[in-house]
Length: 131
Image (cartoon, rainbow, N blue to C red; front, top):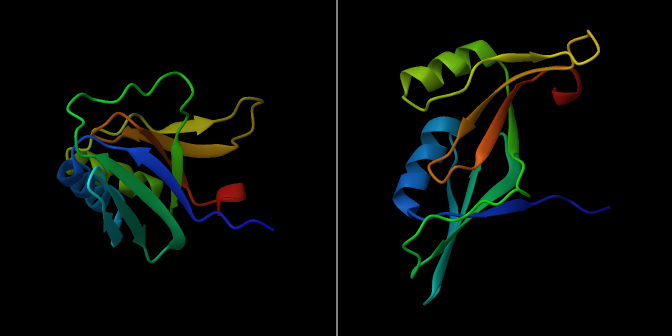
């Protein structure tokens, strides 16, 4: 079977993105590969072996167009309400807490937050299928 190892996003400002992902999710630099035209920065934390790869194109000056195909990254947390409050206190501008119950039964509890480049991240309660 295949093993998911990372997901890549393109970011405009490396320092701004590193600060956001560390403050929001405790992700720190696991590896950094610097090339003449671009840099790859791999972020991880102790919760998972999965990494977020930030690609920084050195000649890029304009924000990326995320288009209409990108969905979101998702992470799970033990205490959703506490994390939402922490995000608010940190000035990360989380959206409202949601109980997703399309057929009347709660399937998931979550909120979304956008990173500095506009990528959406879903923060889910670590319960049910997301435990």
